[in-house]
Image (tube, rainbow, N blue to C red; front, side, top):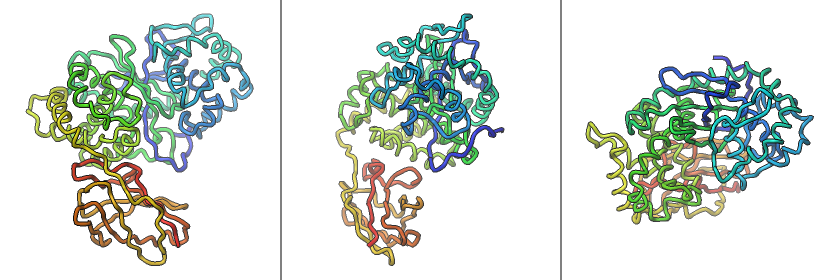
Length: 480
């Protein structure tokens, strides 16, 4: 597998994938048909134009996560288009995090356009990311002017080899056939008849989304996995499984969302309590919060059945991420679904488990609470000797005999195993634990940050009810 056109990514562990759909009328698109999956992987010309425009804006250059940077093709783009950095279009579409709807719509609505015989953009399909926000249509005259003056189409053709290589790597490195087979077996046939398209660009770095293009076509718009783009990230099976999460949790919206619509009243009852959503923004959509929980939980089931040897640590990682997004009971929800799945009848699908799942959630939601670390003040410790650390929790925890911590100093990040060998002990009511910390490697550091439950920690701390301790919980230790 060739990877020569991309370079190393320093210090970032971020995995993702990108989807999109493209009209059959669009001839300016490279595509691969993923073997035996019925999924078309595409790299459309106008979609790339929209991403390049956004990358050139002040926001695109300054924001760390919105536009992927650091690879040769990105530098080629920035160099080639620098003479046009004062084009009025770039100020007009200089969005921000607060204007994410406009940003996402500008990027994704480009899918509906193609260049006509006069080298001008025109809409070829009736598709909008958000009918209330239409920035690509609104700025069409300026976009045409920018594409014409910059000779974008010529630039695009000159980089065909990069696109072909990227599509080849993507098709080889993702379990698209397995995903599709699993989802088709677990949800209704009506969804299975639809076409799927995946549209990619290396510039997309966040805001994956799924959209119905028309009555026959579903599409996803995700982020590409780092290991596809950078030689420094190994293309190991584990990394591929981690990366496929972003694609899977977009693809399965096409299955989960229609299934949820059959149980809207039950979902409203089961998700009546505000605990399920902490400023995620998904409450603006019908069944939005529940669907997000469900898509991530279905991914857990998929890994458990297809990659059981890797499933537990990888699904735990992603629940840390989901927890930080405002879905604080993601781990609990997924385990509940997996338990139902384990005990289901031989002829039952995940879709058939909705009534049982919703009944349990409605019953238990008022009993749930989110455990937190109470001892968050900076702790002074002499790093010359072993030191005892005490952690207090807001509620009784599961008194495990071992767990993991993430230790971060100025120079490195390490995972630390805490067990009986660390003199681990729990208080009588399991709301506090003590253990010895041996920070030999950090003796010359002014401070150390101890993270409980975050990416890299495979053995999490849970409450008695099985709820994940708040992700990112930390204790700062000062070196006396």
